[in-house]
Image (cartoon, rainbow, N blue to C red):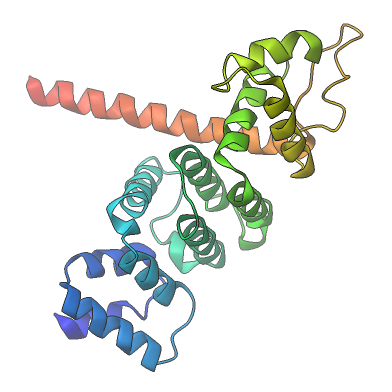
Length: 244
């Protein structure tokens, strides 16, 4: 088995590397790590090993593997996605995320961007926007991410910020207006919330809280949520068919 595992770690297929690492005991994993370092391995293989050894495999790494399989089953991304430049970069950005201070809310955002970056209709160069969004999301705090989701919810309402802010406070998990304002400014600085969010919509027009970049982010989130809903429906159908 050991020779096969060493060979597998030289591939760029992250799922294949993870499956190999899962079959190993601690001693075998240590041997693989030593082999990778001795060979001067860089990039996705070594990064996968390092994150796996850090204990992430028991939580976020297992979860991303499940989500990626859903994307493949739904026909959203190709099975060999991690052999492309966009796929390798997507895994790289994901590992940067889990190597920091990951949380479940940003994890789902990463999954959405992962799917968009590796969609079948993408050429390798088309994923630059998704990868940049991954970097932006990675720098957001959990509170900023939660605030962004609330802005997405209210974006497009026929109202203005004076009316919306009290309603937004009901959904961000606290009632501190100054904290909401601080998180909104952080999202403005990140390029996801419109700079004039406090003022637009006052003349009776639709309130737009998201910037153009924020709109692109929202579109990818919605596409991902539709995929997950479809997957749940298919699983329920399969379960019902099995009971008959």
